[in-house]
Length: 436
Ligand SMILES: Nc1ncnc2c1ncn2[C@@H]1O[C@H](COP(=O)(O)OP(=O)(O)OP(=O)(O)O)[C@@H](O)[C@H]1O
Image (cartoon, rainbow, N blue to C red):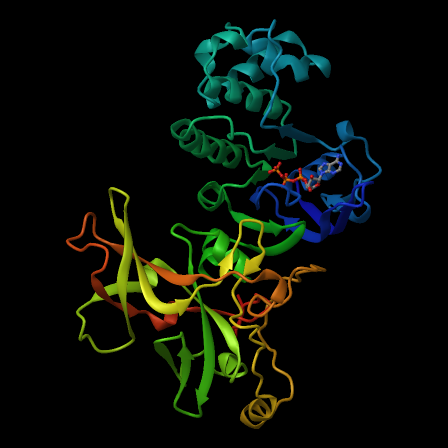
């Protein structure tokens, strides 16, 4: 039984760098929690604080409900595997795995038994007598994992354990790691910057940007209903299409989402219509994943966008077409800064009075977003922040069958699944009702 509670934890390094900014996450017993984010977002620092290798500047960490900040690392019942694990070169595989048990005084016979069990669970039972130099990279990583779990820790911390391996081996070991931890029922926190790894391995994913927690949820939740623009842009391949739209409410009928040269119309009876209506006269970001877009005949009725193929990418099992539709894309960089050309200095046009008349409320709100984003000085407007201008005509990513009979310059009509659209405000927060 092992639970983890990270409560409002901040880590500021002596040089003033804020590595972790008021992060709170709970990990349930037996859960496989992945911490996901780009390099430098504070993932390793969080793991190291849980392990007791670093002290938080403020906040608390509880294991099984008990505060542990005053406990030495060895008293926390935690095992950790790093990217750069080191095996003892002069010891055999069996001796390496058994070493933590030897240190804690376990006799040779039960030790051998435990080592054998762990090694066969990891598929390295036949190399117990070899030295590390005689192993492949994947086998060495398995030995490092074996050495970590042989003590049956309450909590297993893994920091990018697969990042030094080639992609085939990574995929194989992903499945082994999740299989093993689930079989053992050991609570695991796993750090990666690889979103595919996170989505395939995690029970739940916590997504960080510059030390600030952006979203926590199951892979389906964070992919299907991302809490912020940053999460939307970070998860999925191809990346979510993020388009600037100005909102115009035709009361009781529909909401026009003007995308530039074309518009989409959200029916008034759509469950999200009232939340989006709060932005009447303003600009928002409309997100559409490639799976929400289907090529149709040019004269097809319904919610259809028309564009011209700018270029194609062939991925073997599918091809991606990137369409010019006369819209403006919001570009979210890896580190999470959202940049956009606010045209000629374009200030947001606000129709506060009209909004109030429409909604009967002076303030908008009610998005129901649960994740508290903490203090994040860069989360200003993604639509009009003058410091972050970047012009980018939208190239709408659309999935096609492999090697389609079209080429750059071809016109293409795309049907849009309106119920699969995502809406974000100028701060990058999801605009929605009935948050998960
Ligand atoms: N000992 C240290 N002193 C000062 N700054 C540090 C120290 N260790 C890490 N940092 C800084 O803290 C921030 C978070 O680093 P951390 O290693 O936790 O990120 P990460 O998300 O794990 O990145 P990576 O995926 O590259 O390992 C970074 O800006 C990093 O430069």
